[in-house]
Image (cartoon, rainbow, N blue to C red; front, side, top):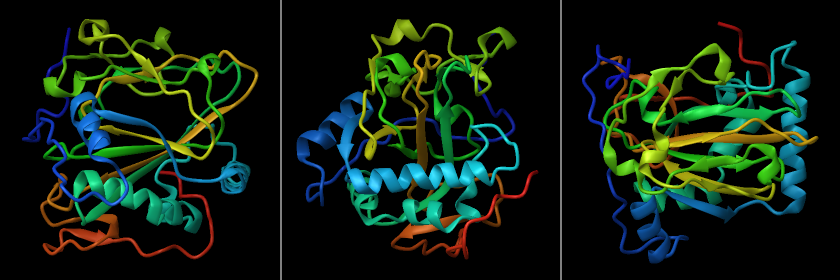
Length: 273
C-alpha cells in the first residue's frame, strides 16, 4: 500500500524552498535559476586531479579500517574522522552551498556510497526528505565523485522538476529489489524522464531533498564511489527539542540548537551501533 507520510509521529513541513540570492559567490544567476527549476546542478568542478586521487586514497584507507563492514557502511564518520570533517568544511563546497542556502550552514549527515563491481545493489527511486526526521525540508545534498562515473556504472539519476510535488507516495522496498535503502517510489516515471549524473572524480553534483533520484546496479568492472555531504540552514529542526549535534560548517547558529562537532583528532572508525 502506498505510504504518504514516512514519519507520522512528527509534524513536518515538506515543500521546496527556492534559493534567493542576488549576489552569489560562485554560482551564476542561471545556475541558481536551474537549481530552483530542476532541483539539481551537475557537474560542478571542485577538486583537481591530484586532490581527487587523494580523496580516493583516503576512502580506501577508511575502508581498510572498517573492520569487515560493507562498502556502504562509512556513514556519519565526520564525527570520528578528521578527513571527512575537512571535506564537509571545504571552502569551495561551502561557497556553492551558501549561494543556495545562505551564510549559516550546518551538516548533520555524511555517507560514502561505494558500488562495487557486480554487487547487484541499486538505490530505488526515492526522496531524501522521506527518510529524515527534519523540518522544514531545506536540506541540500552535495554528492562528491570519488571515482569517475559513466553510464555503465549505475550513476545517480534524477527526475528534473520532481521536487515541487512535496511528499510523493512510496512503498517499502522488497527484498528482490536489492535496494541499499528501504523506500521505493514505484511510479517515478510519471514525473518525467530521468537524467544521469556522468561525472569525473573531483566533481560534485548538488540536489534538493525532495528531488526524486535513484541508481541502477554497477554493471562495470570498476568501483563507483561517491560521498554525500548534507547541508541545511540552522532554522531546520530535528526530533529532539533540546538540540542535536552537527558540524556548524559556516557562520553560526544563533539559537544554539545545533551543538557543534569539533574537528576529530585523527581518523578512526565510528563505533558500531
